[in-house]
Length: 118
Image (tube, rainbow, N blue to C red):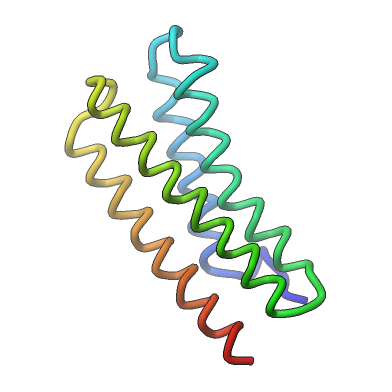
């Protein structure tokens, strides 16, 4: 078992979650139950799935949960793109978020590879 709070990828995702919540607070009220809740859920899912997987009994199980967290990261990226398409956020803001997500995804993939080698 791994202590998720010590994982750099979980720590970085924790910061991302806060940034997503700050961003979604600026979305129009009409998106409260649509993009807003979906984006918040996707961001929290990345972090939570890493935490949940870290408590599993084997590295293979943990890697499987990390695969799921990657899916949530892609989902969030897609939702950010839609938000930009709807002019809810600027291209610059989109670029900042996608850059951070790409780094988190890279960290997740590296951890998956490490776990699958063991």
